[in-house]
Image (cartoon, rainbow, N blue to C red; front, top):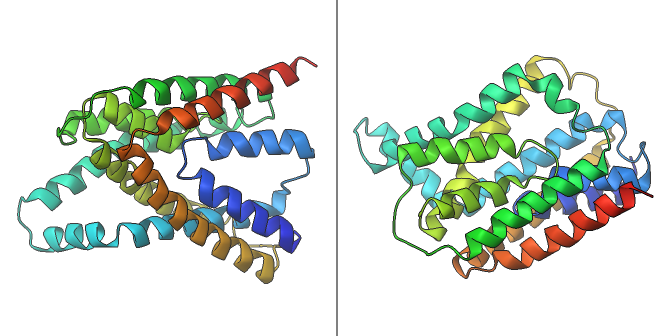
Length: 263
């Protein structure tokens, strides 16, 4: 893997992980445009490193929130932080079950079908469009809300469905405060990312990496910095009801992907 490729992939991962445009969908479109060998098999370690970088960027942005949660848990009391942690666990259940029992079926959707990716991007656009017009309330995320948002996260395992877009949009449509919706959306993915990394390590999938250390480091640093920028920016955009811009973008890209698939 070339250094420039690593930096470009780091930029794409860092921004699309948090912006509601589907990082997996863009990766599939990129492979279709650049050719099937654009992302080599050796890049499994690289992909894991990029996800680790964006998880760390989330921790940096929400470091105060995470510290408060940890302090609340260590107090061994039924407080706001303990309840929030339980909601995070509940939100993880749907995606964890789908990933564990239907991993091979999910992989079948990542076969380069840009028409499917385009259709899912249009679905993402619709979600963002409706969420941007939802009335903002001060309603906190409830336990039932957490599970429904978790279902949205599970659906977002499909290429073209934005994880951040679907979870934030679902939360807002349920009547949750937009700021709280963005906060919950970004924090709920951290355990899943670290869980996936742990699974890959235990399965031995990363035991024989061929990716050179310099491109690996460059990709990590780029994804980490871009992730911090995108995460911070996204929170502000959600609060200001600017999701419709991304809805238009996803609609245009989705329609182009479907049109190109028929030529």
